Amino acid sequence: MKLGADLAFFAAYVAVDWASSISDAGTIGITPWNPSVGVALSWLILHGPSRGLHLFLAIVTTDFIVRPLPGVPLARLLSAGLIAGGYAAAAAALLRRGALDPRIEHLRDLVLLLGVSAAAAALLALANVGQLMVAKLVMPEDFLAISLRQWVGDVIGIAVVTPTVLRARTWRLPAWGSPPTRLAIEGTAAAIAIAAFVWIVFGWEGSDEYKVFYLLFLPVVAIAVRRGLDGACLSLLLTQVGMIVLVQSRGFGSAEVTDFQLLMLSLTVTGLLTGAVVSDRARAERATREFEQLLRERQSELEHLSRISALGEMASMLAHELNQPMTATRAYVRTAQRMLDSTEPPPEERRKALDAIANAVAQVDLAGAIVRNLRDMVRRRAVTREPVDLGELAHQALALVRSQGNPDQVNVAITQQHGAPIVVAERIRIMQVLMNLLRNAFEAVQPDPLGRRRIEVRITPIDGGTGVELSVRDFGPGVPPEVQPNLFASFTTTKSDGLGLGLSICRGIIQAHGGRLWLESTGPEGSDFRFTLPVGSDSIDT
Ligand code: ADP
Image (cartoon, rainbow, N blue to C red; front, top):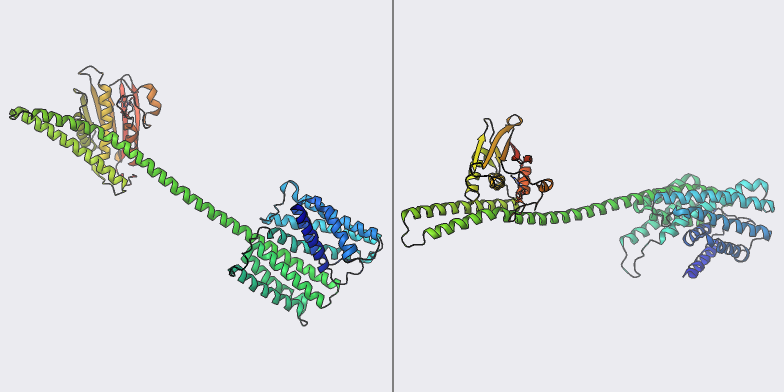
């Protein structure tokens, strides 16, 4: 494979050199158009600077066999050695520590390639023409002119050919016989336009080449802007080949061709840089678009995950919140069933049974309200917010907690300070919070001796009446130290039948209302759980 590629480059070098041996370069063979140097540098970049030896053989083949040049053989050999060694060194410098990406993907790669080649070409031109002068093949007075001719020929050969060869490796050609693509049609039109402009500048006898040369900027820059570096490479190659063919056929001398080539050099650099900037921008835009797409995908994945986790949370919340009313309902219904068991229950039993049924209905209503509220949240319906008097709500919550079979003979004092405002909130959810806190407090005071089981609920205005704080204070043994660090995390519990969800659900509800829930104090003399609610709460985040 490697040998095949080397042979192909060898053949390409010899063929290009032969085809481009133009103008009256005289006996020294230095022309202002050296595309073979561009081929050689691509070869060295792609296959490594060690190909310098192959290049030396290729130069010797062309200079001694294909189009033999007269003169001192030693000077010719030296010349071949200088050029092969010089460009191998340039390739080594370009590739050192990965400085150059051979795909010429970025503007910096192009600038590096052009800069290093221009410097190498200048040194080589001076050295080569110098040694030809020593060998008496170049007159001292021609030294500078011939050096400039070699330099411009080499630089332009590299600038036009090397980026094209390197970029061409990334191109995907359409399958043979497939219908013409837009790109192919556009490419053909561009080629015709370039050919027309080149003919106007160089083919038409009546035009002053120097004056109208700037016309060539039009197609080249337009194509570079539209198609980036690849468009620039191809249009410059076409411009250069067309120009050389016309200039040759009209028999211009080396000096004039060198001047044209200096103009061509400015066109080449402008076209290539424009193309590289456009390609860089297009790549950056593509990368941004891809990144945005990725972000969108991740976002929807995340939303999906959060929906699933929200569902899981809902399910556990439902299990937690329905457990109490269901148990209580069952107990009430069983009581009523027992009381009504005899065919003719005494009026006293009947009355108790009716009370139990009324209590069961209240529990079922509570369960229904919790489920409805959750359903509205899941469907993202506008949840109903209403003015809520926390004092009144605390009494209702207490009644329900008492009726859920919690410890008896607990003295609960609810005090509402004057000025405690009415808040706008979701009644049922705040009710859940109060019931959870009260239930925990009831359970906490259970070990206390009868008559000392005491809970205090205090409602006070805060922030100058724009908010309200509610405290549930029990006189139990306090929150066990081991659960304190994760008290508000899900599944933190010390109870055999507890889910450890109550406080985490409560905190979620209060935060959704724009408030805060925390443990104010805890110890052997009891715990004080508090939450705040702003009055407005008009943006409830469910
Ligand atoms: P659960 O009641 O299902 O265990 P919670 O989140 O409501 O879940 O409570 C978590 C834990 O915090 C309880 O198991 C208990 O150990 C402790 N705790 C909560 N409230 C009190 C309180 N008022 N006094 C003492 N410990 C409490």
